[in-house]
Length: 358
Image 1: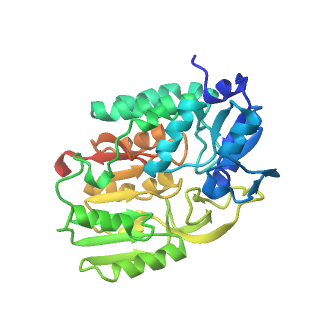
Image 2 (image 1 turned 30 degrees about the vertical axis):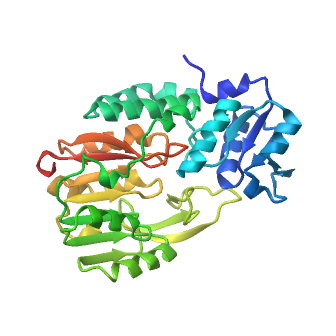
Image 3 (image 1 turned 90 degrees about the horizontal axis):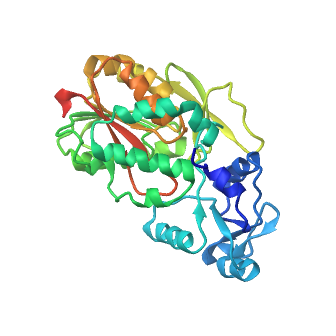
């Protein structure tokens, strides 16, 4: 079997330097350490160096790293969807070789060769249900990236927000957004579907919810909001890293690391929140709680067969677990895979359309 990213780094004869610092870098370092790989130094873009230190080491500029080490391999410690940063990644890859291990946004399961081998058949089953060649090609690029750590498969993705995808439904009247943040996706949907009549939106982070309320106050549509997390049932969850890319929702049994801080947030099922309404589009981007949130929407999904847009990048198993769960609800969905342009493989979503909503 082809070597995974950790095996490739383990056989690296050049010094390994990490580009970037912060929470993402700490997660990558933990994954490297678990596979017996150490990093010699850290560097950052010139505008971020400014005498910074990280993990007890002075953060170098790129020029200083080149002067100190000459040639070296680079491990990426942060992510971006900004085009100028992606071009910087491509340039580093062409000069040094850039590795970007896929670490989980939520939970602690890391995608490596052992994980892939244990779940290879499940990944194959997920690929097999995809409805078009574009989705299968995207799936293959994601898996090539996850296995190799190379950024090149991700940079093949063209920039296109999911709201402008040609496979989206022709009309949406009632939209429900779980993980609505500050209303950015509500705004995108209203731009795409100006005839939309009703909006339901849930957001667990209090500061983001305040911005969501402010945005929705100016809408002419009927709007119902809840400051809560989407879950399988009513309860209380831990919200870690609110407002960041590393944010995650966990139940009370989840053990926090010594560096993590969490706030308690109320949880509510989609079925309870919608209270018998008939949405024709449900969007879930709920920081690693997508499986539980979908379970909490099962009645609505079975009854009304809405189009679904479900984030599938927070955990390595999301790519096969979520379509399997949705298929178990008995609605004959067509599954498409969407992803905007970023490194690492953020913003992966399943678009699930029923025949009558196409």
